[in-house]
Length: 396
Ligand SMILES: [Ca+2]
Image 1 (cartoon, rainbow, N blue to C red):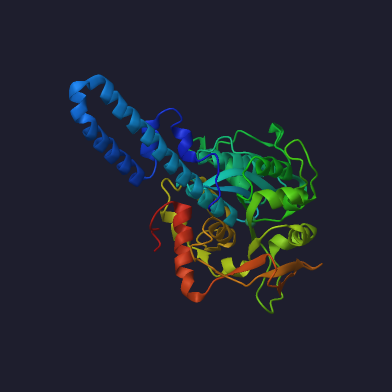
Image 2: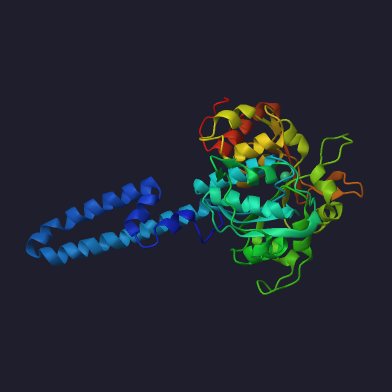
């Protein structure tokens, strides 16, 4: 969280108006600035009697400089809490990706996150249209998008085409304006471009689908964006990788869907990624079900909200869905908030069948999330509130 970013959302609204800009900063800074302004003016007031115009101007100048200084401090603080994120998703395969993306948008609206771009690991062209429309719905008209060409899961599946084709009172619920015909780059190429433009060791990457784009990133060569190869670029720019995938329950014979879709990509991820990885296995989300009551009651105009339309199209209602991808987002953005317990350090390897094998290693860079019984309620409440953008969901 201590790393800086250059494009805080709060800065974009008030580029030429320092007063509005200052008001948008933290309230204590604004109150302190007001106090200093008042005190300095009073201090200079006796002199003003003798030479009113000139001294008043001097006091104002000092105040203005202090305001700029305070604004700079506030800007610094704002930058410190805005996490630059690249979200890699297979939206279209399961509905939890949409819930996770809505969490990120709500974090961004709070100023805690700056979504640099979204890369797509589901290789179906309509998913690009869906995500473009979903970003526009959340006020991000020009979100950088990347696509895994010739990747896995090319079938459209259920809710993406249904939501794109849904009309309410004659109007679409998603207003897509981009498709693969609009020069959408390869996912890994967009990741390279976005990473290269960020400060060192600042970016949080969240991967909640098959790791196709990540494999291609790690294999990438220097290009016009960076003279570093993929591994070196990741090592320099990425602070944390949060992955939904693998299964770390002792004795389980099940396989994780995200891993087995592209086993070679998963193997390369855990073998070659040069930094820290925190993994959420499916057992984490399995224990935390998103309540259908939230979908039915928490959203204004839910009948045409694209999240609700998609959720209802994915399975017959009512149903509660595991929060797999949401857990990876929550940990990535708030790793120090104590929502989850973490395993010790170790090394994860993926075998040829897709099993995730965790080996304890004090020098290892991999850890996985654990959810003790007494933390479940707090985690689920937080995730629901973050999806809905409300302090208290109606289901609670
Ligand atoms: Ca997913």
